[in-house]
Amino acid sequence: MNKNLITSILCCSLLLAGCGGSGGDTTPVNQDSGKNGNNGNTDSNNGSTDSNNSNTDSNNDNTDSGTDTTTKPVAKIQASAFGETGNVIQLSTTGSTIPENAEITWQWQAKPQGSNAQFSNPNAKQTHFTADVAGIYILGLTIKSGSNESTTQFEIRIKEKTTPSVNTPPVADFTLTKQAIAINEHLQLDASNSSDSDGDNLSYKWQVTAPANVDEYTLVSPNNNVASFASKFAGEYTITLTVYDGKSSHSKSEKVIVIDNQPALKAVISAPSEVTLSSMTFVELKSDGSQYQGAVTPLWSFDSKPSGSQAAMATPNGFLTSLQLDKAGQYKIRFSLKDRQGRLSEATHTLTAKLGEANKPLVFVDVPESTKINEAIKLSAKRSKDTSGRPLSFSWTFEPFEAGLTYSVTNEDTDTVIFTPHGEGSYRYFVEVSNGELSQTASGVIKSHPENYGPTASMSPQMSTATEGETKVFVVSAEDKDGDPLTYRWSLETKPENSTAVVNNADNRASITFDEAGNYVLKCIVSDGKVELVVAAFIKVSAAQNSAPVITALDYQGVLKTDAALWITPTVIDSDSNAGNLTYFWKVVAPTGEVIDSTTAHDSNLQFTPIASGDYQVSLSVVDEKSASVATKTITLSVE
Image (cartoon, rainbow, N blue to C red; front, side, top):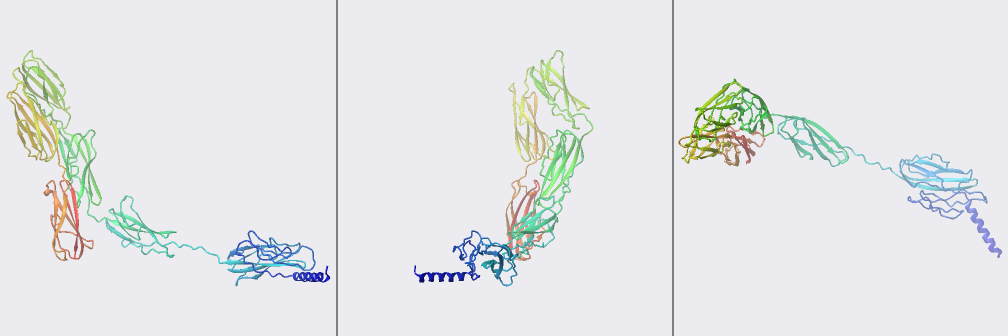
């Protein structure tokens, strides 16, 4: 080999060894952005690039000095390259080569201005510090073993810790313009003073807590910042406003008193407390003394009545009614008034029906004067009455005038008996009618003969009902086995005290127009010229159901100017033509909300003079006093 070439190679080797033993590393600052990888420092012993999986380490090109063949130190730092103020940053020598008894030193290369960060142990393999100021921290690690040492450095970027924003709850606020309002008066609720310091959009919810006995009130726009409240029931109410900013809510409550300033509403019953029962006992029930204004709805009803009683109110929806008592005992009666605001007033009354002093029954017998031999006939005492209201019992007996006459009879212990004579002659009958304490006997004579058959007849309808004002037709169907011509005599045997009804008849047909509620008995005597037969019909007439009036128009005359008189004329239709039963109630509400009372409030026409401009609400209520039906109509007049 050429000696000059060998000498040159040896000199170069010595020069390189001298440079590596200076004892100090020049390590570039780690610019790793958080990904694991190589810091760009090449180990002089192996010339390889170190890669870390989770934390970034630093590895400088450390060159040992001298010819020491012992283990040489290699400094590497493992730590997180990023953090936030307040974080504790952990530092480790993991990956470093640390000979036995080597010296480890952590030192600061640079810190942000104002930082007081310190290593927890600057000479340990693991240490840490607290990042107290945002900025760049550059730290160094030196590992020294004998004459050999290795130094590296690491950069950590710290940012200001982000603090999550804290929501400030909203504040609900409102003030009532009034602490007390009248029934049906609207109170405005305004939440405009509610606020949110964060500037969040608010949602609103209004709620009402009503008195225990109230289950109805009015709350308009409960989810708006402006609402209104009203109630038709008096009492103390709690108004609650809740505002919500999307994260938290706040509520505020105020109390308001609703005052009953409406006219008095009071139901009163005027009726006897005790009556003596008779065969037909009618009691009139009045509402005299009741207090009300405007349209109200009356109602009569029973709370209880004696067992078995079929008593009913003649006109349950009138201010005046009556009932027929049919059993002895107590009748508990209720009368109620309800106005258009829903207010209710009730009165109760106990009516006791007692049996009066026993009197002898009144006996009425319907018997044909004659019949033919072996012809069965009916004898009836059904029309008999007991004035004390006691139930009646019947007992029939028969006695022939002539010896040897025979007869047969059935149902002799009822109000109607079937009698059949078996021979020509006269038979005396007796019927004893008893009320359990006293009795009365009636008698008469029936003749049987072969020459003539008495007529047979029936009236249709025999028992019926009708309505006051209704006309009914009654027909008697009669025949005579002998073919004798028949005549008919009609009459009203019973009718109400004030009735003027008459019978319009032609032969076997008759008609009656019933003008009063109550009981009617129509009688017709059928005769063949020899024998007369009486047939009758019972009619129960109820009060007519009155139709409600209808207001079809409210027309005005005059100029819609202040201080100019106006005339309001209604068009009212009453299908019952009961104009005399109609009462007019006018109401004018000024633009201010004030109610103007007219001096002619009950006239069919209204005159008033507006004194201020604006919209006037004119209302008319027409009450049919016969049925308590009400019609109402309102118009708006805009006065300039």
